[in-house]
Amino acid sequence: MKLQTRQSGMTLLESMLVLVLSISLIIFAARLYGQFQFQANSKKLAATINQLFQASAGYYFANCRMTLDSDSNPQSTGALDPLVSDVSNFLVIPIQTTLVAQGFITSWQPDNPLVDNSPTNKGYIVQVNRVLTDKGIDPVMNVYACTGSTPSPSCDVTSRAALESSDTKLVSQSRVVTLAIQVAVKLSPLLTQAEQTQLKNNLNADCLSSDSGSGVAPCKTRPAKGNYLVWTRMPSSYNPNITSDYWISTPYVKQFNMQYTNDGMAALSGIGNETQDWYNSLNYLCGG
Image (cartoon, rainbow, N blue to C red):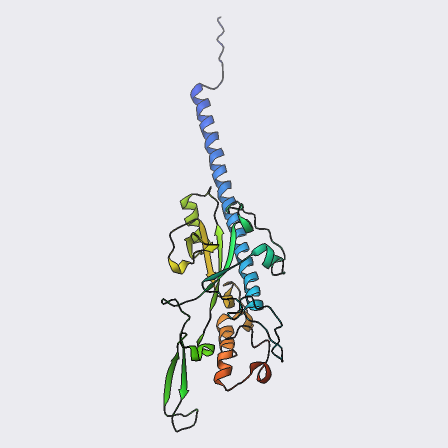
């Protein structure tokens, strides 16, 4: 009898099929890992942005007005006070030498693969923008006064006077200086345009902007798209995720309290000298 042997093994086609499947699995795993890394870095970037806003809000309330004692002697530098530093457009706040050095940030770890960490401040720029009207001036403050014969609160005639910022006689009352905090992040040049757009949408950035002098062009100026992600928030609402019944974390209540404890309202109420007649440092965080 003639014995016939049967050889077992893989054909070339089968080997190629296994190889293709293996490569496909490796590519899929790499893409999935890349997506996880992208999301993780995005969350870290969001945390850093909120950290900068919180620190900037602290710096703002500590420096937006020169605090005076009962003898009108300055007790603080008031770096953002319009009477001390004229923020005509915007003012950059150095992160390392100001926010970190003065203790507004206690743990600064900004390195992130999504950010171009090579520039100064690791690619992050914090600035305060002066909120101006379309005419390039501070907002107008309208004052309603009772001018009728019937005493308040039942006055029969109410007149309105607009205190224009250009009126030098009323400039102490009419200047309503409003500053907004802006945080900009210079994105890594390795990111594609699609990834930049995804970051902007995921992190609720206001716009993509570009350099403007020593800072970054505000979104209100409608800048050409650049490689900076920009967020803008008011100091009284530096973190939209804060939920609390305390007035300090309720921006509208906070704004109301500050509007009715500032220099303008004091002057309209007949207060001659705020430091002697109505001085309270808590009431004058940012007045005038």
